[in-house]
Amino acid sequence: MKRTSNNPHENHSLTILLWIVSLISLIFIVYWRFIFAMEYPRSWDQVDFTLALNRFDLFAMQPHFPGYPYFILGGIWLNKWISNPAQALATWNSLLMILAIYPMYQISRSFLSKTFSIVAVALMQSMVFTNVLTVQPMSEASAVAVLWWYIWSLQQAFKKHSAVWVIISSFIFSLLLGIRLSYLPFGIGLLLLFIHKKKNYSTKQYLSFLILQVLLAAAFQLIWVGGLAVSEGGVAAFLQLALGFSEGHFEEWGGTAVSASTPFFVRLSHLFLNNIVWTGFAGQHLFVLLSLLTLFVYLIIKRMKRRMWNQEVSWFGWTFTIMTISYGLWALFAQNIDKPRHILPLPGMVLFGLLWFGLNKQKNVSKRVIWLLIAVICLQSTYSYITISKANNPAAVYQLIDYLEEKNEPLIVYTWEETRVMSYNRVSFGHEQVFTYSTFLADLNYYDDHRVFLTEQVVEGFDRQGVAIRDQIKPIKSFHSSRLFDPVYHDIELYEFLK
Image (cartoon, rainbow, N blue to C red):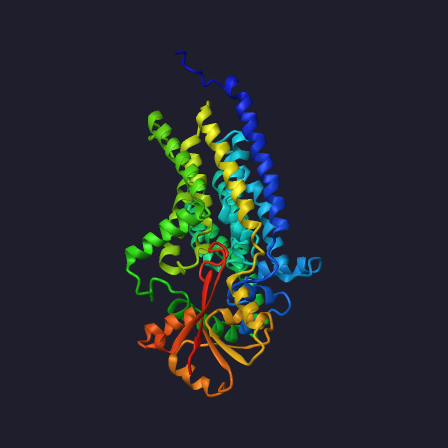
């Protein structure tokens, strides 16, 4: 049998098809993000952000600390034309993600052709979980969009002698932290850039350069930090608020490794297998996962066959790798693993790294790789549409609200975070957030003539306190919604307390 050649001329038409599929994917993804922007906040954090557009107040958790001022400013600006505040914030995400196409493309051009750079952008922009978070009124998607500008600015700064690019990198990093402070680990990129620049100066010149750059970087951060301090009544009040939030977030609310009793390897496997692989890469869709795994394995095998292990890695390449690993460790030790949104930067960065590893300096890309790329882009785009088109389907907490609103009798429902959404919607029935059984019993004295309901989260909390609460309740109704959109409260079980 005659062996099929893989020369560029024979693959030309297939490459054109891949380029067309990539462009069509980008166009539709952009359109879908706008038309499926979420209309109602469906979690505590989303309510925090949404309320901030009408009254920015950190003490009232509108939003919660540290305020995410650049994200909120974008939402306030769009809220002038888009009356729905949740949609305004989601649309701001979409606009920034569109702008992120440029740095994604420019970084890709350092190791790919123009066509395959577009393909790389389409792969990253069509990832299901990225699109899920883009249509929500949360700051993660905006932060990832700015992160790619920051990474591109670092690449330029490593390549060019001019200190201007170092200043630009510092400025964009300040924008990044003003949108999402938890992206602080990416600051290691700036530190490595400062170290790299030492070869361009004498010792005395480098010391002057370093002092100036550190001062400028601090000044850029003070723009948004200082603005928040002024808005909250001064530095002392701002520090008090920061300490209070940090203590609660890491010791009580965050569920981080510092306070959680979960074994380390259980936590690690949950972060990697569920949050990064199943949710971040696959968007919780099996076909997407299988197509990506096939692409990754094939690219790695092809690279091994070419035996290109001695290729020199640039300073930027090492910096990109170190930033990715650093944020992965940060997500493991200092973030709430019950909320997969905290890993959002990782899937795109890992995918980009694998494309660099597998396609770098390839003159002839095989037909199998091209077909795999087409399959992945088509699958990711299709499942992105299927998933985000359901963004405005009622969340479990809204189903719970509708059920209780239909009750024409006095009632009180005890919840955990669900009460924040209930308050936002100004429900007609009573609701309270409760954590301890003693507080619950004391509060019941005020509701003698009410039916008393509890959600599953409250019941489980009482179970952990050693209270035989199951003997005092009966199940009433279950409510279910998307695990992707509601990772913690996708299943809500309602119980009635038997007085």
